[in-house]
Structure formats: C-alpha cells, structure tokens
Image 1 (cartoon, helix red, strand yellow):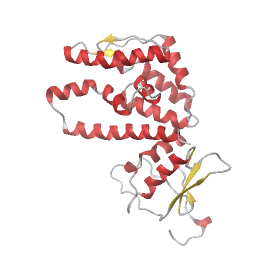
Image 2 (cartoon, helix red, strand yellow):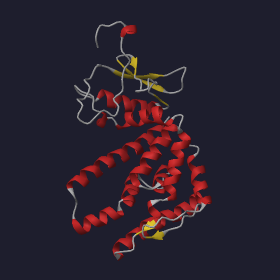
Image 3 (tube, helix red, strand yellow):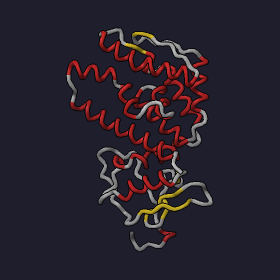
Image 4 (cartoon, helix red, strand yellow):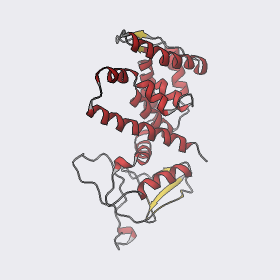
Length: 258
C-alpha cells in the first residue's frame, strides 16, 4: 500500500461487473485477515488492516467465521491482478449485501414464480428414452415434494404453459420465507441455473447433492449430447455454470457452520 494517511485513502473497492474487455484491477494489498465485526454480528474481511466494502460502500460482513475465512482465502489467492471470476464466494456475498438485503421479498417472489413454471413439470413428448429418464428422476423429486413439503404440482407433456395450483405456490412461498438474504441469494442462483426451484429447494434441504440436482436439471441436454455430440462452446458455458452452482452450494454449507 502507499504511504497516504488513513483519512486520505480512497475506499476499498470490491470488483464488480466490469466490462469483459476492461483490464483487471491490480492487487493493491499484501495481507488478508478476518476479524469480528463487533458491534455488528458477524466477521469482516480486512485487506492490510482495512475492512473490505462492497461497491455500494457497505461492509463486507458475513455471519460465520468459516464463510469469512473462505472469502478471505479468495482475496489472498489473487496474483498481481484481481480476477472476480476466481472469487465466487465473494461475489455471492456482495450480491446478497448490495442486491438482496432490502429486496428479499422480490427475490423470494421470483423463486416462487420459477416454481410456477418449474422444469420438472414440463415433460418431453418423445423420444421414449428421454421420456423414461425424465419420469425416473423427476417423478421421484415431485413425490418427495409431496411427502416432505406437502405440495403437489401438476405435470404436463409439451411446452404449453399451465397454471399450478395456488396452494402449491403458497406452500413454496412459505418454504422460502425464512431464508435470510445470503441464503436466499444462493437459492435464487441455484434456481436460475437449474431452471427449477424444486431442485434447488431439494438440495438446500439435503435431499439432493449439488451434483444430483445438476444432473436432474440437465437430463434433456445430456440426452441431446448422447445423440448428437457436445458443442464446444456450450460445454464451456456449462462448466462455468456448474462452477457457479458449486459455489452457491458451498456458500450455503459455510453459512451453516458455527
């Protein structure tokens, strides 16, 4: 760091969604640490003794030491330049703090909206092998939802939109309501990545592993690959999305540690 006085220093900026062609910011710190954020609850990440702040100048504070240490490890692992793509836990925390706190109701409503058009409820009309694979995996998941969540969804063949029972969506809303901003952010990410609020909830509640939820969400795509081969660009995009899925799953797991 420079020899500027503390009150002259510019606030620490967390990497945001910069243009893909913009140069990555240079690393401007040597040491990374974690400390209690008292009097606030939680733990802060320090760069050369200064607390990291989000792009909206909010403190980057998370509720568990395990999560704070994992985020700090991402900052410590940066080389000469800071690459946000290698900091998925930091990005999730920033998204929650800057984008979901204060807007939790809207984010929860989006998840419920996904459930109203959930991937698991729209079945292929053919070929037979794909229909059977969907039924084997997706029917079991819908059965779990009925038994464990007390919610029953209508399924249909084809892509024509259908309306799910209001009581089913109300039940999903009640399931999502207790989530705090950080957990809700992860649930929303997993929902959008899989196209299924039900798969995301199944993973959060421990019924499915992240890999099982991911595989269930990609039955159609994997069937097409088995028939026609894999497109290189699509494979790259899928790996990137799987990395996001893993990050959201790990973030949730770290949130649950003392």
